[in-house]
Length: 293
Image 1 (cartoon, rainbow, N blue to C red):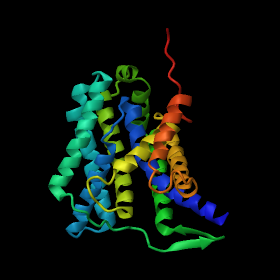
Image 2: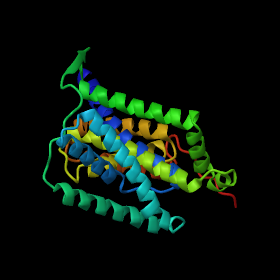
Image 3: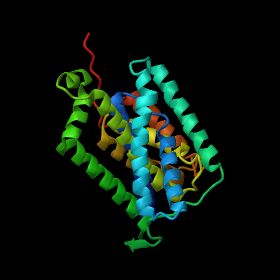
Image 4: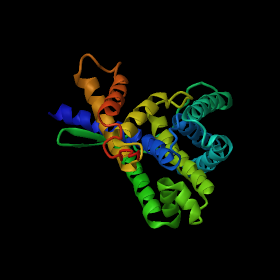
């Protein structure tokens, strides 16, 4: 029993990381209706920016703040320069643009920093807490705290600020928001900047667990898509819950399903995505789309 509970703890730790990237996917989808396939690469690039600041002697937490600021500005620029010109275009066009952005950011990171693996410092202590036969690492606890803080800040932004109210209005009905004086274009750019910032947190959380290299977020992006699909692409809470469920499911399948094992765990999120699309396309917390005849 203790071993089973330990696997759940490990799964929750991994799921919190998936949730942070899924949250970024959901934010962009809520504001623009776009599924950003380049979200993982933007998070990876932000991790490199933080690493570069630390490489020149900037302390970790200050480097993180600077990287988040760069990510926010970069997200806004991407919306203005790359996404805005294809606004209203067919969905396939937008998909191709985000896939192209994926390739470009990956190649740019390799060109600037090379494809050699780099170490990324872990901001959390290396010890662990042991209680009742369970071991919870300080790193895992730190990830939970960071994701919780991000969720809390997003809640305060959306529920208790004028900017958040405007973003919710644009998300619900851009045309009506424009009629009451909300600058929809500026709000969409803010949404992309906010999503890029949240994604950057995910990249910084992943980098210490893996090695920093341009392809490090590829697998994480698959799990994040599964989390967003399971929770609902229009629900930030669903993204977090979905991430935790995916993390636990993947860990338990790898540990207890012999046909899966540690080598085929990546198939778990794909099965989850397929199952949700077949049984409940809107996800656990998403709203079903109602179209009038």
